[in-house]
Image 1 (cartoon, rainbow, N blue to C red):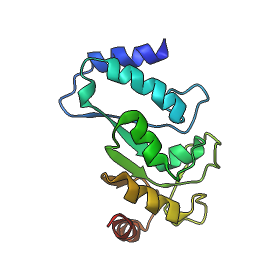
Image 2 (image 1 turned 30 degrees about the vertical axis):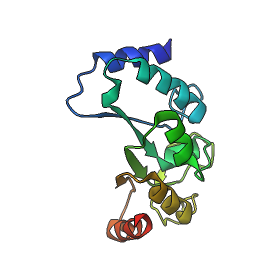
Image 3 (image 1 turned 180 degrees about the vertical axis):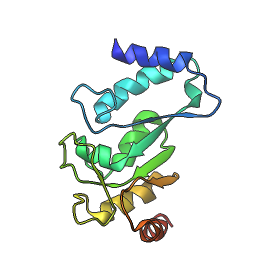
Length: 150
C-alpha cells in the first residue's frame, strides 16, 4: 500500500523541476532504506505518470547507516534506477546499519566511513555532488572532493 502511495504522490505532484528521491538511513520499514526496498519503490515510481521527471539522490551517510556497503553502490543503484542525479556526500557518525542519520565531515574524527570510500563513490557516481557536512572546513572538503572526481 505504501509503495502504491508513492506512485499516487508522483502522479499528483506538480513537477516544474525534477523531483529527486533520496535514500534514507533510518526506519526498518522505510521505503528508501537499502537497495531491495529502493527497487520496490522504484517500481512504483516508474509506474507513475510523470516518472520521467523523477530522479535519484544518493546520500552516503544514509547508505552507510542504512546498512549498504559503499563499494559498488553506484552500480547497484543504477541497476535499479538507471540514474544517479545527485550525491549528498558526507561521512557518518552513525555506525554501519545503525539507522542513525548523523552526518559528519569528510575527514572528521567522529566519521566512521573511510574518506577514500567516499571519494571513490563520488567519482563513480559521475553526477553533481553536494557536501552535506556540518561544521567548519568546507573549503578544504570542496578542494578534496574536486580532486576525487577529476
